Image (cartoon, rainbow, N blue to C red):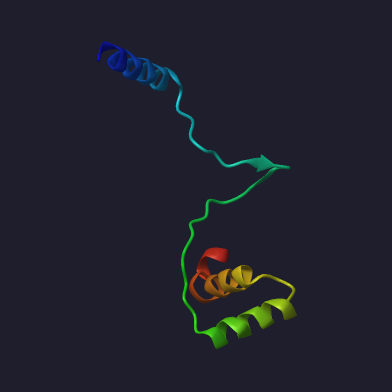
Length: 80
């Protein structure tokens, strides 16, 4: 029983002695990527297909297309 307690204490000591590191944004070539959160969006299949086609026509991604539409519709004042 003492061996089990000492191994637990050793493990706890190792964990406590290690400095916790938190992830930070990477600065690559002077560009810092903004923090993003994942958001699940459900769309009817026909709308998704149309968005994919629009994105192909504009040579962009569906993600960028949606983000630019949101910016244009709701955040016009912030871009000034």
